[in-house]
Length: 190
Image 1 (cartoon, rainbow, N blue to C red):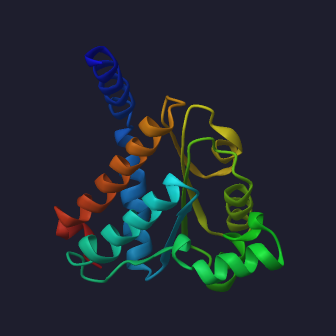
Image 2 (cartoon, rainbow, N blue to C red; image 1 turned 90 degrees about the horizontal axis):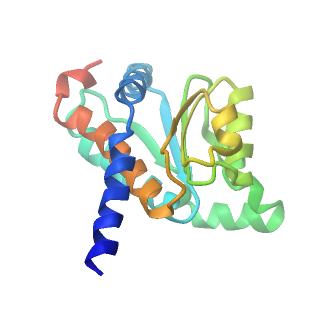
């Protein structure tokens, strides 16, 4: 048992140690730009990544926004259960995110999605739609990379196919983005 635990921790450590400082810096700067422009950031994913998007939403809308001179207009598209099920029922589950973006997003806004496989059709369609509408697209994916790694404007690939390692590393990146503003309030001045 101890050997398995040690291997698990080593695998998670390797995934975390691969986090790119340059990637996080680029995203912080993009979030600053959107904050200054009073734009919006939309986060979403499926399964564990949906939960990460909700957690990220909470941290940015409350924690980071408490420290900035203007509050982040940050939304998790996973929260609108009624809208998601209506779109899924009447159109297709593949449309649940891009059709929400169609209602709310503007050019210059940010789409931030997370996926271990990088191939979820509903995420791919949302990023494709966002790219055609002048939004900045960011994807966190796992080692399989998938279509999202090809089409998002900013991509970070966790070098693992282990769902736990990838999702936990994605959340560490989300926390770093949030705490960048919480611990450096001057970065959130407009």
